[in-house]
Image (cartoon, rainbow, N blue to C red; front, top):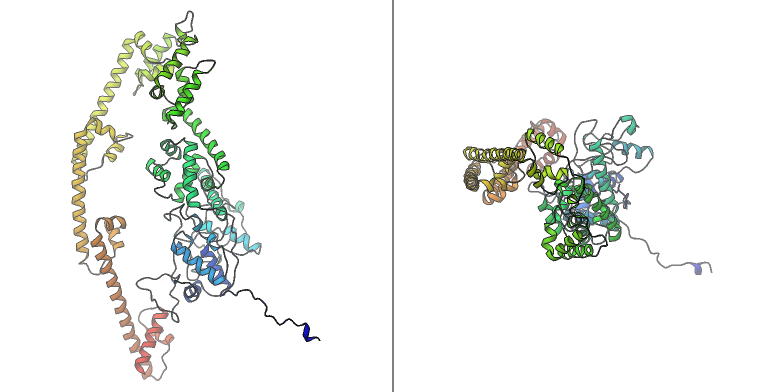
Amino acid sequence: MLFDCWDCTAADLPPRSRLYSLKPIGIGTPFVESITGYVSRLADAHAVSVADLVGRELSLVGSKPVRPFGPFVPRNTTTGPHGFRGRAIAANGLGETAKRWVGTLERATLQTRLQFLTLLPFEGVLTNSGLFRNIRAWCPVCYGDWRRADDPIYEPLLWTIRSAAICPRHGQPFEHTCPHCGEAMLPLGAYTRPGHCSRCLQWLGSSGTSKSDRGFGINEDSSVALRRTNAVGELLAAAPALTSPGDTFKTRFRDCVETVAEGNVFAFAKAARMSRPVLVRLYTGQSLPELGTLLQICHEVGIPLTTVLANDAIAAGVHWTRAKEALVSSRKSHKSHRVALARSREQVRLALQDAINEQSPPPLSEIARRLNYEGVEGLRDVDQDLSKQIAVNYRKSGRSHWWRKCRAARICERVDIRKLLERSLAEEHPPSLYALAVSLGYANEGYIQRKFPELCYAIREKIRSEKRARVSNMEEALKAALTEKTPPSLEEVRRRLGYLTSKVLRNHFPTLCDELLARRRLHRHQQRIDLKKKLQSALLEWPAPSLVGLCKRFDLPRHCLERMFPSECASIRARYRRARKDASVLRTEQLQQEVRKIMRKLHSEGNDPTIKQVRILLSQRNKWAKISTAVATVRKEFR
């Protein structure tokens, strides 16, 4: 009877993972763990090095190996060396490398949501350019706090991002060099351990000193850097809640420009302190922004970074409306740099019609000020009839031309006008008569001209002489530029003279500008010919130079050389690879010959040659893996 109560059905066992199923730390928070930090923590849990974990285990789990392969890395090393090399931070990024690492780790640990340990949720929003540091960064106080609290030691994704320069918890800059050995480290090295140097293996955390003990202060620059770091942290915390971030970003960014600047991309670019072409490409969706660019836009305009990715358009619109009010007020306080917001003709026409129906008819200039226009010409261009009707209504109201009425107060006393004109005439760069009249409250300079014709003539003559001197300086600068060995561009001449645009030079001296551009084109063509000859002569040099070395020699970026001379660059790269391969084969043969002599000598002395003995007797130091391979090859020959 006892055996009848037994349940012999097989129990459902949960699936077993190849590696420890470590739970990722901090998903949905600013301090979410990075995928490279997760790998080092996983290696530490298995008591193996990162190199062995990646090269001998993870590379066998994934459909494609995650370790880097190159022309000089052995591709079939399953029982030999692990084949892992210290690498940069691409595993935390946006591309195929990050997807391959996430897929491999999820298969090995059976953990999900590991994509949030990278920037993959922001694919289609950001570009990979300038995202990460090339070296490891950390906050020693965070490491110390975690160790004292017995919390897991890990590396947040925030620490790997280039735009984050200050720890948001302790307000101190990140460290980049080991305090013990003084060396910088790769983000994921062969012997990386959480909280330890991958070179000397020493502890990187603090020994109990807090922020106040170390004396870190927050100045204006560090305050801006701290706000940028907090913005990046908010972005990482919002990653799990994003849906279709690429499409959402394009829509929200256009809505932001439409709300803040009413569609005027130039006004928005000016407020964000960005170039107009960059904003146009972002506005039209032709390109994706760098994270630093997006941070600058949000900081200068005054909106949170997460509003351009928010699913809730209403909540984002509140921040955009506040930014618009701040932008309008800043333009009012800087009228000389004011840029009107873009409005359709229908919107302007509706504003004019509303002004006609007002009980107290406003002047046309008042409507222009309401719409933040500098003058009334734009209103007349939209609808001349409505503009005339508004002017008629204002005159009929009896409030126009008040200065012509009996006993009307003077706008300004003549004595004060004379003093202002004499003071302006004594200045080195006197303002125009129109500017002086407006500063006194007049609509134009007509009254001042009638009352003080001699002073006005003197001011105009001084302004004309200054203009003639400026034009003469332009001509001399352009003629001098034509005689230079390396002809400058019009932009360079413009900067030398201090003008805002090169159109000023072309308007006054179009012939000289064309001659300068023609000479510059001829000079650049000759430079390309000389550079091509140098590249062709580099193909005959020995040892074969690398393309990177030639770029440093010529002081040119690699993409420029590859774009101008694709065939020569391909030949240089192929020749360098062949030379490296031949040199590697020659070094291997020389090593085998030296090992063969050493092993014969040890045999003749009656000793059994071991790898350690051979390594001691070698004339040059070599890697253990190469020595062991050479010893194995020579042993086969002896057999």
